[in-house]
Every structure is written in structure tokens, then in C-alpha cells.
Image (cartoon, rainbow over all chains, first blue to last red; front, side, top):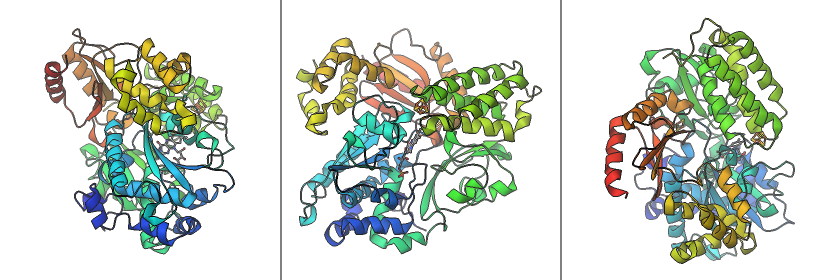
Length: 419
Length: 164
Ligand SMILES: Cc1cc2nc3c(=O)[nH]c(=O)nc-3n(C[C@H](O)[C@H](O)[C@H](O)COP(=O)(O)O)c2cc1C
Ligand code: SF4
Ligand code: FES
């Protein structure tokens, strides 16, 4: 099947406005603005079954429906923070098929009545922001952004905003704080951004990949979209495949493809021909999946992955072969979360500190059994006590690695990456 | 002074946000200021504070919170190697050690001529192209993917001639 999101892989130069338009680009936006009411657009997205690709899988149309019509102005914010270890799909969309994403932003803005939209990019995406600025300027010149679009009363401007290195700014309320020029620390919710968002106004925050799906739905219809993927998870998904595979990269596939197909058919198999030992399906925030036959044959959609005691998240599939011990893996993930904890709440700030301290003792092979038990206890105690999901994320790999790979935490294991 | 050197850029930045929320401009202004010397000094912070209608302390807090802003000079090029989980599974830790060895520095250290600082950083959304690093320098940030130590040394040699 031809790509629906990574269309640049089939159509060279789709990143140029004339080529994008020759291939049907901005017809969906035009159709929405000239032939559909905002509510009809939201209804179509609802009916399509599109769920947010930023990790939580929340139904997109439902979220748009939460925006109240008695508080103005409204904003749309595209989440291009893409900082979950193992995730690199939004970057490819923005670099190579930027107009489809920007068209999605524009349609979302029309649907929720926003006249301004911001694209929040992680600060490292300096060159991606430059690309988007150029494409936004192209759209302005072509009359696709600005005042009274397509002769209607709808006006829209899109702006980029660069972050500056902080994973927590991918959390939507921290992201909004960051656009407001503050430290990126999560807000206490409720109120949710749909009601109290950017500058305290109703705001829809969506992931880049989520938005790139929207023009397809408006163009080809909700039923067509729903026919792709599984009953639980409609449509296609970009799987970012990394770690111990021969052909790491982004793979756009319908939801429901199995781990085995992704790793062996698309990813070219496991590095050094070794068996796959563990899979992290949601980047560093994953629960550790034991890669047995049952897991490998599990279809990748939100509900099925949950039966493995894990989440699909943003589908950042990190493959780990049997040359690695799990203590080494969680040493990496704990370092990440300790570094990225924003420090606003005590359970996460102190918990990540203690987890780091304990895993470092384990890596020095000091009193392994006692320290492992303590590490497990600390992680368990953090759960359900943190202000935002980051704190919870930081414990997922830790508790599941210890529970599901106990042999890797025995004193006889020699420590290190081992491979 | 930023206002004298970059009047057009500053105007463009301020125009992105509603006039009553000038504080939003603090991050883009810091990115702009940092291009000058690779870090943001007190004078720049004061000027940015004035442009945004906030205090210098507010600006310093922002600089402290976000890892891409620096308040002290380091190497003109900061080579930031991703050693996070996915890259580490593909040899990023070894790459960092070998690169530092060739340069005769420790991770986090700067070469004696003040040209390069090499440090380990978290995931940069390039996990399929490890080993990789970004370079923070006078032109902003660039990515260098699927790297080897030899390729990196060649890159540094070229930069040595170009960056004064
Ligand atoms: C710590 C943390 C980091 C996150 N990082 C991202 C991110 O980089 N990109 C993203 O789209 N969503 C991220 N999210 C999810 C956002 O909070 C939000 O749910 C999402 O942007 C909503 O868009 P969607 O419904 O289209 O997925 C993160 C959440 C948390 C708690
Ligand atoms: S859980 Fe961690 S990241 Fe989230 S608010 Fe608390 S300290 Fe900050
Ligand atoms: S883990 Fe290195 S770029 Fe993602």
C-alpha cells in the first residue's frame, strides 16, 4: 500500500508546495472551510476513530468537542516536542511531508475556531523549525494562511516556537507554560487545556502525527479511515523501530501488525541473529515486555498491547536482544528520568534521585539483592503519587524489569551491558 | 546590544505572540542571543528581560531550567552525543569514549584550544541513526548521524579552519 503519512517515500518532492497541491494537497482544507461547518469536521474526526498519536491514545474528535464556545479566543497547539527515547516519527513527517502536517493544523484550527496555531518543537529541532517557517511562508504567499481564507470569514496564522531541551515540555500543560515563556512545569489538572490552555484560553493540543491524519479523514471520509487498522485502533501508525534490529527506522503500517512482523519482516531481524529478549513498545516509558512467542504474535494496537501488561504509547519500539541484562537497561532509563524530572513534586523529584542512587549501587555489584528489593519498593511507592505522568513513567521499566526478569538481578550476574 | 544588531529578528519574534503576552518571546530571544557567544551573559539577560517585560531573575530561571541555554562559555562547538537507551544499544557509549580518547579529553571536557566540548545527552529523536550527535554552535544546531570517530575527527578538522 502507498504511504498515507510518509508520502514522501512514494512521491519525491512532496515537501514542495506545488507538488503537494498537484497531489491533492490542501483540497481537504478547502473542502472543510468552504463546504463544511466546523462541527461537521469535528464529527467526521470523531467518527473516524482517530486516536491521539502522542502516547495517550485519546480520541481526537472527542477532545476537539470539549472546547467551549463561550470563551474566546481559541488556540491549536501542535506538539512537536518528540523527546521520548526511541521516538523519531514526527521529525520525519515535518522534514519530508511538512504540508500534510500543516494542513492538519489548519483543519483542526477551523474545526475548533482558532485563528492562531503554534507548533511547539523541541529546541534541538532547529533545522526542522527553519523548514516549517519556510513552508508557512509559502502557504501565506499562496493564500492558504492569512485573512478570509477561500473567501470565507476564517482567518489563520501558524507560528513555530522552539523549546530548549526539556522532555517534560512534551507534557501538554508544561508545553503551554513553556510557550508562555515560563519554566516547563506541568499545571495541576483539571482544568484541562481544552478549557484553560494557552494564555488561559481554550486550547487543543495534538501530536504532529495525529494532525497529519486529519486531511486524509476530511478528504476520504471517516468510514474509509475506520476500515484501516483494528476495531480498537483505527488507521495507520508510524512505528519507530530502534535498538537491536538490522533495519531500524520508521515503518508506517496499519494498527494490528504483530511485533514479530515488525521486527522480522520489516526490521530485517535482530542484530547478530540473536533472540529478542525484551521489547519496550513505548520508548523509555515502557513496561518491559518479555519477548516470548505470545508477545511476538500480539497485534500492535492499544488494547492488545495492554494484555501484555504494557502500553503502545507512541509506538516507539525498542528491541533488546539477549546480549543485554535488564539492570543495564533500567540504569539508562532511570538516568533519563532523573535528568528530566522537573522537580515540581516530591515523589518524582526524590524518587528518581533514590532510584538512581540504588541502580548505581547495583551496577557496582554492591549488595545486589537488598538494593534490588529497595529499588522495587521505591518505584512502587512512587506510583499514583506523582503530579504528572512523568513520575509514573519513570517507574514502569524498573518495576517490570525486576518482576519479569528476576535472573538479571541475581548476584551471580556479572553486571554491565554484557554484549 | 541585541536590539541594534537584530532589529528585524526581534520584531518578527515579538509579532508571533499576542501583544499582552510578550513574555512568550523569552525563549526565542534567548536562542537568538546565544548565537553571539555560545552562552547568555548578564547584559543579554537584562536586555531580554526588558524586551519581555519580566525581571532579570525570571530570565535567569529560564536559562537554568532548559538544558540548551548556557550561562558560561565552553567550547565554540558543543558536540552532544546521544548515549540514551536506543543509541546505547547500537554502540553510542563506546563511540563517546573513543571520541573523547582521540581528542584527549574526558566526557564533559573541552579541548585545550577551546574549540570543542564533548558531552553526553539524552535522546535526540535520531535513534535509528546511532551513533549520532548534535552540534550547538554559532549557526544554531545541526545533526550528524550514523557517525564514526574518524568522520567526527574530519568534521572537527574542517570546523577548526572555519570557526575562529
Ligand atoms: C512526560 C510526558 C512527555 C510527553 N511527550 C510528548 C511528546 O513529545 N509529543 C507528544 O505529542 N505528546 C507527548 N506527551 C503527551 C501530551 O501530554 C499530550 O497528551 C499529547 O500531545 C496530546 O496529543 P494527541 O492527543 O494528539 O496524542 C507527553 C506526555 C508526558 C506526560
Ligand atoms: S511527576 Fe516529575 S515531572 Fe511531573 S510534575 Fe512531578 S516532578 Fe515534575
Ligand atoms: S536514543 Fe539516541 S537519538 Fe534517541
